[in-house]
Image (cartoon, rainbow, N blue to C red; front, side, top):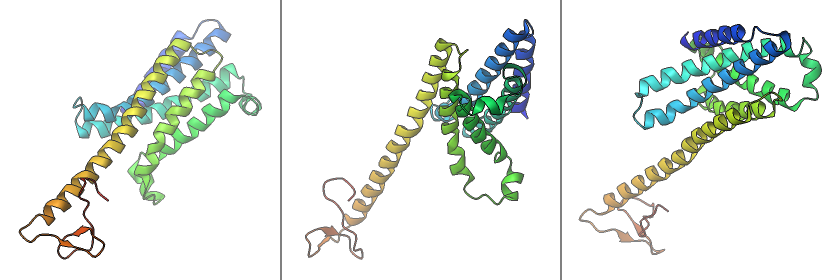
Amino acid sequence: MIGLGLAILWSLGALWQGSGPEALGHVWQARWTGYGSLSLLLLSLAMRPAAELGLVSPASRVRWRREFGIGAAGLATIHLVLVQSGFLQGQFWFFLADTAWLQVGAAALVVLWCLWFTSYPVLVRAVKLKNWVALHRLAYLAGLLAVIHASLCPWSDPRLILALGMFFAICMAWRWPIGLFMLKFCKLEECHEQQEGCSHPDQPVRSPAGSDVCHGSSEPVSTNGECG
């Protein structure tokens, strides 16, 4: 509920600030509800590095990642309504056919809706979705599509888009290289445990192929410090 509350408050602020001349008001409202949605999505992605740096607890990470994600999806929906009723004057499907930034934005919105739908345990159980955790990694895809959408929009602020894009790049760089590093680290730890298991008083026997094996095991143990 906090995420949706943030989306509604942001939307009310955008509507109030964009209450000037009609054309400029519609552009202002569409622009800032879009920026707000992207900002909430990036905050959701930032919960992972924040937790790993000790800035938030693991429980808070899960809670706020969900709340910010729901807020991003809700605000993106409001953004669509404002664009459709204002700037596009009800001609969304007409412009969608040959407008790249609308196509990318629509794709991002579909992904956000899927993530929003699967953020509620009752709905997850209703559709019997088992691998919903893997599905929520699509938040990074939604972020990428949203950044591209914002950069292609004709009324975007290049400096703000650059800042949001760099923030997203940091979240991506933190998610994937660190994940690969941790995976390799865990594999090395497993390798060392196997070698320690072979270092009991009974020495490893030499297999016919010339590799060391633990007693009672047919798995070779590398002697160069790497798992084979």
